[in-house]
Image (cartoon, rainbow, N blue to C red; front, side, top):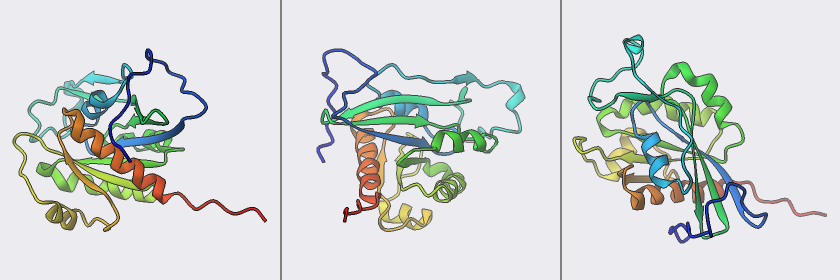
Length: 204
């Protein structure tokens, strides 16, 4: 699949043509991993987001260790859209990363064809619960390693072993602030999700 998106569509519209294939994808991961940033980087429309400033009331609930730049958090949903090759439209639904939002996560994930699980090499263990949740929902997923400037770098095979990934699970390293690598991560998920769909039954 050509991973170069087409955004020259004669103006931004919210209702795609009937000829397009629509995919609902979830962008998920632990708190502070860059989900909102990735969706903002990729979306061809103004993003819907529900970021709020973090306050003292979140002390003890949201662990900001290693995240000195973290001052806001998603409290409901992020939403964006990316069109690929003019006939494939990816709808991105970003989820809150905190455990207390699991019921909301399950609602957002309903009807999704796949999930992009974002991870941070400074806090790989924080991703385990998210991947377990995605697997429990039966969603095919890809892993996007968001390369923060101060994060340790590891080869793909090291990350796969540490995250205990199935050999078929795509893994992409990217910077959520940069469009090229972020597109590659989302395209890897879309292809994996499409390949995971059950084969159509032949009519008798």
